[in-house]
Image 1 (tube, rainbow, N blue to C red):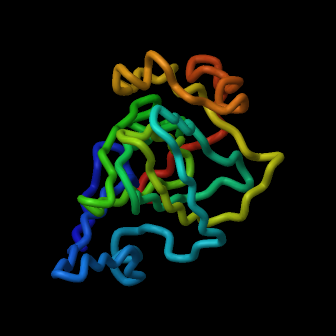
Image 2: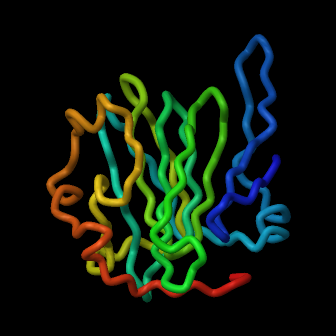
Length: 187
């Protein structure tokens, strides 16, 4: 597994070795020693998945302190355009975002430290996304910013007719969001 730093401090793209043969493929998604070596969390409190149809946008989600969490995400069926948005005040990349294509085919994963918002849109008929998070779901601390307020270049088809939850439609914009997250260099 290759762990590649991104332009957002503490956010990593993980590129696994995919072992494929006539039976199919095998992908390792976690290696504690490599994660620890790169300063990433190695203890996860919950794991879950979502199945999304064409044009679904989920996000941009996070949990507020004191229940913030780091997150590891990857796509095991289909493909998504995945987005990470830095919400940590004092970060050199505060308010900036990155996008990545995560797919069952490429096996790429994204590690987001606490203080980053996460979202994605499907790039085909459906996508199955896996998530590992370092804190348990706390409904009173669950939050987000509007998917269309951070300058993310979502695909035209998605921008024209996104399928969004009522919750995601009601989030504050990035400009309206008063971030409680603080950047800690080296954390």
